Length: 162
Picture 1 (spheres, rainbow, N blue to C red):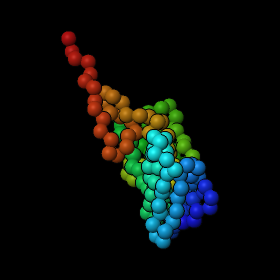
Picture 2 (cartoon, one colour; picture 1 turned 120 degrees about the horizontal axis):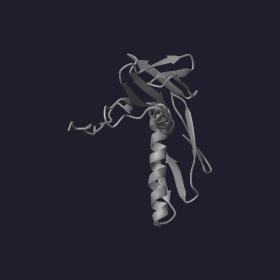
Picture 3 (spheres, rainbow, N blue to C red; picture 1 turned 180 degrees about the vertical axis):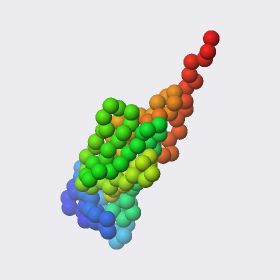
Picture 4 (cartoon, rainbow, N blue to C red; picture 1 turned 90 degrees about the vertical axis):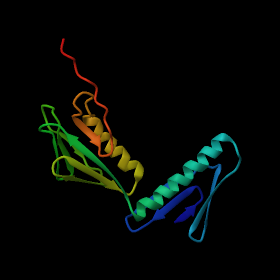
């Protein structure tokens, strides 16, 4: 990890990440420890202190271990596959939906209904996963659509017969 003024750069076996730090926050490296301190006890500075600490911890975790998010495709005839540098989703539209895979993200599809998004940046993995889920969010009545693997959907009751 290197600190150059307001920029922090973290290198690891999986890659390299960098971030700019707010001027009211000070970051110091003491051997293997990283110390984050703030200039005052103002509410904004306290919030930035915690945010900066979390961002640095996520950067270190990302370049050493990485982050993954799993999505499930549920529905009759719904499936996903990777073709070249694009994720192709067949989720009930009249045409397949193609999503280009970013260079810093790795997407794998298991059994046509489980999508695994992985990468070194927690922010990028979460955003790509949210973009995929937004293509066809889970239906409130049948539960069909794309959902996170650990997401619980509370189904609404349908029409009751008269």
